[in-house]
Length: 539
Image 1 (tube, rainbow, N blue to C red):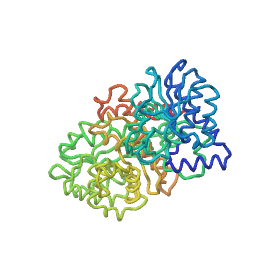
Image 2: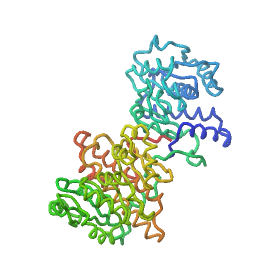
Image 3: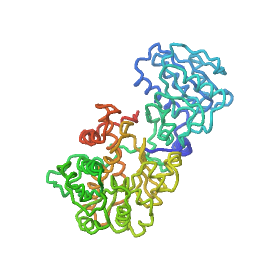
């Protein structure tokens, strides 16, 4: 499913109206019907329910007029509050307003939001004030209407986006509607997945309005990752060949850990195995190898040269020998920033010609010397997995700057380091050097706990190992970047889904990284049959 900017959505609408021949009033009718359908599905019985519809003077308001009529047909008692100028309405919206009047439905025009008297028993409200083209702080009377709506003690359904948010940047310049549900139309807009706007969205529903938008040969910003639309997900997470053996599913090498940081490599290793890797070996400092081996059952360990509890450059020959049988490496969790360890990681990034998932202290080592990638060949893909603070160090900026433009940041990471970049956070983003963007919709605040990133690194290792093994069995020319990007997006989705399943049982406060790993089998089983818990598709 494509994710668009407001300008792209306008181009899509224009193309469908002018080139395909689907009239604007039909699209408006379909939009209002879609919103009413979501209301009926989520609210329940509407017979006799008082509904307040707040409509503006643009096409968003026209959608609201249709919602009012459709809810009346379902037995509700809608009242439309119109905060626009009738003479400025475009033809499609004006037509639907006249239909409301001819039906005898109440329409209040020019009401002062400060003096607005609403039915105290209002069952729900519909926000159709501002559309995706709105920028900046809302002006009166829209500002007052937003304040009045937010004071209601009932569910609020936003049409396309909550009024007052920026659909491109996620900014909230002033007052904005705090929606209980947002029914975004045709394609989701990127601002719905960016903070602070994402706090105003509530439950997000994506509703079709009568056309297959993904078939249009028009630009788009990115895609929501959906396992149901992923051939890779079906292959990696579906039934395996009866004659398969562990060699068919890749061998993950994990370079991680230090004195006092034994848990990190153990979490990575267990997650990689649970995600489906055939073999996993942890290459760790000799001083922690015995403790690490006692924590692991199915995974192997290889002790490496260390000093002061951390890896040293003397470990390089053993790593390169092991690399001959590894499919890829996960490098970084719990390594520390000991000078010898940093030097080792920087050396490996230049000479280890295997795919690498780089996380945690591996990213910190790279940020100190990006030139270490100069000799890295294209056939050895690099996957960077920073949180916003690590991304800031890699790009030489601040965490607040990263958070203010997450899309720009993840794309810059991918292009500058010629890597697949995964920027962690609510709605994790995945980008490739050519500008491909995936938005992840799984996950919950309970996953904000120590070790959660390590479990993601392991899942990435397990999924990528299988994808790499599968692709290299098909061809001798290497693995395509689009396949790797899809595998990274799949791993992020799976990580969040396992966290969501764990949260259903354990709640957010008690959730641990180990719980995420324990719920991976359930997540794999549900991956292809269960919709995202965060985004409902209403078609």
